[in-house]
Length: 512
Image (cartoon, rainbow, N blue to C red):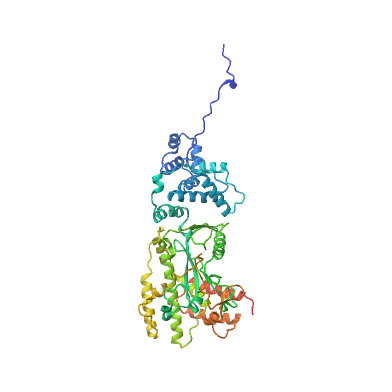
């Protein structure tokens, strides 16, 4: 007699628990697949099904990004991201820097810093609870341990920490085209070599010299492919030479000291943020830790990275040759304009608007090689070859000196063009608590907006009689003359297109 079949409900069902793999193991699996190893062997080795292996390969980019950017603990098994991603990244970067500097960090410190970042990033609804902090620590594998006494007492070289531990994080997170450095420098925009020794070594003197100073904001990216529009800070918001001017090739701001201020810096960063947002880019901008460089809230496309205040200026890329190149080129142009007026027996006139145009022109001629080399000398690694513009600048310097001597204009004894270009390098350019501007504003008066102005300043660089604006037809006639001249030379397609764009722009304007 056959036995009755057992009741299926009485047979225990054994379900095999699905194996979870860490991010580190998933990376090993990806490497094994890409090396040509059979998928069946890999699945058997790690005890997973083939469809699980296929899922890992499908999400390969996410796994590798998490592993390479160190955003997650390699032993962690899930890639669930946080709602406040920007906050967590900022907090984690701060934690790593604190580790590099041997600064002990505990839970309350981390909670305080998280709330601080949340406020700066505009997350007004965020509160760092114990539960959030525990989940954050779990996500990133953070364990707080007592710091050994001898570890905290070890002296730390800020330069070593910066180059080996801090800077690499930013270089890992951003492509060279999205890494920028900005730096301010003072400039006496009408300073000629014939009167330099009257104020050499002075921070700021009274009268005409003080009125002729401006502050430049200079910035470029690491691979030399992009130079930010210059920021120029003057003393008068509406100088006489700007009359009827509706647009400039630079950002222009003004205050009575012609200095960088926290308000000017914030406006500058927001303009740049709008520019990068339109390009759908995320960039990091390295800036000095000055009172005039505050944290700017709610930037969408810019991360501000502040150099430690104890760090030497040799780590600031713009100081390693970019600003020097710009100033030398500017002084060359200024001297040439002066020599031209001497040769034509005309009075030398050079206004702030002339300085703006000349600076824009010279900034465009600063080469990518100069920028790349400056970044490399500042400790930023570069994948491009080194460039060297010093020989070309030396040759042009010799030509310029010869031209000046031929025109009967001599440089003061012992003053080279490089020295001449660097005379205003030590000018103060930003707010300082201990500064006293009483010398600078002596013999001056303020207009209704509170900015410095004087009749002498308005007239010293502008013609006595104001020239009328050219009409639309006169502009087109001038453009025709320019086209005839340029077409007699070897022109590339870019210049031809620029001429066409100019003509189309003029034609689109209403006749006046």
